[in-house]
Length: 408
Image 1 (cartoon, one colour):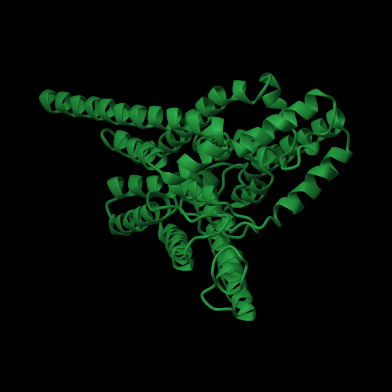
Image 2 (cartoon, helix red, strand yellow; image 1 turned 120 degrees about the vertical axis):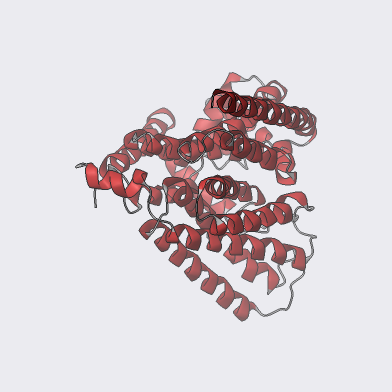
């Protein structure tokens, strides 16, 4: 028996060494590539630094033409005197956030990932996120999506430790980073969520304090400017990876993608029908969440399908579903549903992240775009339906039954 335990420990340690070595190798490659790419391109990071320069001079951050975030991001970048000084720390922080998101997701699933399963799922997470064409692009641009992923993963992790209020704080911070994640606040209302009232109050209070800080430091008009900038950015002439993009770019002559057929009315009907379907999926997520991890990432994936301007990089936020279903496939007794979900989400990863990405500014084949969207929607819908069939875990239903502070 002792020899079997020794072999098991050696196996686990060996697996951790291998997956960490692979993850480090891929991350170093991504880091070096991102630093060189940012120096040449860096459109988003240049915008953030430009906004910081305006703030440093006592002007509105929104004098930077493309800046659409709340001022917090620009204020953080006040630490760096110019764009070149920000490149290395920004890239390091982005990659570290990806590591943190994967780690938080695995730890939140600790009950299902005993022994050798944890390094396998952790390695799957880092490989799928670093061996990834869209990651390359978002790193070249200097985008913020890995920071957002980390905050959402922390919200799930904190909930798994019954820290409901802190979980709400993490979600509010995500919404203060980028405004659209405020819609993810619906996750706090999922059926069986422990101490729901505490999490909602904490999220609302954190958001309110954040907005108050902006109003006090930069003036109330800054909040109006932020809202107006959000409306402007939602109307940018880019290809959205949402239900609106399907009707708007495959059935009308948008100038970005050649339409399959010019039929604007048909396109509008298809988009609205898909939107209604996604809203129904969101309702199902809240009513039958499955577990905390599945409900979070299913909700994130569904919400991104409803955004008027859903960037290709937002598809990265669907990847945690692959890791969570892989964890269930390795631990469930009835694992066939989980195995099918891993296969479908694996196909989603290949189609979306390993093939040449769809060009958001146009020029891609309509069939390529349709393939990416069809596989993505199918994977998300299947994940929501499969999660709904799962028996609620102790973290939700049993906790509600035993916790007097839970709201039914």
